[in-house]
Picture 1 (cartoon, helix red, strand yellow):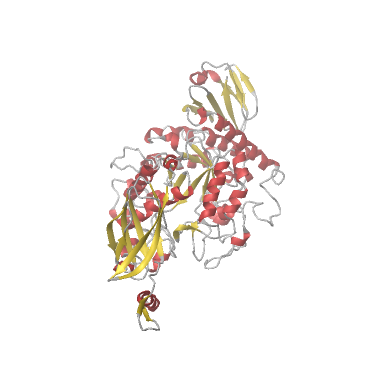
Picture 2 (spheres, rainbow, N blue to C red):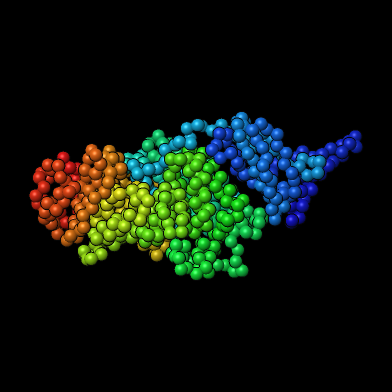
Length: 621
């Protein structure tokens, strides 16, 4: 223990002599940290872990006297400054109760712990589902709604818009200010990149190096601002998805200066980076050495790898997720780097969350383009090793790969439109392929406009596919502005500011007047398709029927008991004549169709003229 800690400990226990010579004990101190900071009554899980941090807190015993609250276990660890208190909460009244930490016959620490009254309906809140369309945005690069937050005392990195990798000042208020832009296009869910405190000396803007799991980064706003965002978004018909990272934290996280135990993180004799080889997890022939480097290596030099096999840390992380769901009212979690954390912990974590919120959405990021491996991480899969992640959804990185190649290729045995057919033909691998998230880019990848060769027609085709195939569509902010960037050229351009999000921006792309005609054509395309999708359950709840592409033309149907939607994608420069008899299985019983994009009407199912580089979305009648 350093000299400052000795001094603080001595003050906490000190006595002083009054003018009468009587010894008077100093008032008990409050611990430096109590996490979670409060909890709720009526939760499905009766057990609660409190992590208490303060000088020599581990050398105390616990005294609690409150109806319905019982101490079941007290755990001291290697560091004398932590105490883990396990409580059983059954039929406890809402309100605060005192907790005393006692050494000898002296109360060293005392604090009031609050149990809030849980809203009975919160357990059954509706999560993100197949009817939704997700808009991904990076808060620091979207809009600066409160410039007073840009530079905060105690933050290691201040705002500097001249640096591509620096903080630019976007915040939660900026997102609130532009909810109408997002809702207007038809998006019903927002996935925000992480907003928890990232008090890191550099690259803190992206949010993936958490330094406090219970605190919104003050440069974004406060916890209450985040909860207000959820409420304001709900008024617009938008759900909020929280980005969570349980594989690693930031190297400036407060506990890194005083780890509870040595195995709180994975430690190596020298810095060891993960191999990023996720195939070693599912490979039945994988060497143990390769497997351990994959799951225990650090994601980066500034991202210590957490050891979720430590039961104290595992419970801490589970409770933290539930705390944010209950506190803020979010509708989904996007789990960063799902395969990198201990997979058995991830399974327990998901079960823990879903036991508390049965209709909640969890989307896992397993970045590998192989359907057999992606499917391993979706819950309900009967895997070769008996593993079940319990994650309702994962991102479809196989279709993501296809979108970046198919529109740039002529048809071959496995190229062009055949890519989509072949990947979707492997949907038998998934327990629920209709619940996968389909996307063309995100904050870590080449921009979708770049991937389709900056061709406006091909971008429209790609978006049409994303919005009409099976699954939950996701679009990255800036797609509507034709943003173009390669990932390997640096993340600055990839994560560009949204023009109009800053008071001194020369143009405001949130307005129709501020956008170019081409940009408005994409906004209109997105708006038209997403509003149609929202009004047409066949496009999100219906079945998928696809035909083998011929001549680089891909035809598929989405249908339910009420509607049938036919999609024709002509991935050729030239117009084509399409004989419709082959597709009778899809259109049988109908007289014609109307293209909801162009308004063109097709009567009869004989031979149709299909424009080149175009996608028709046809409502059959």
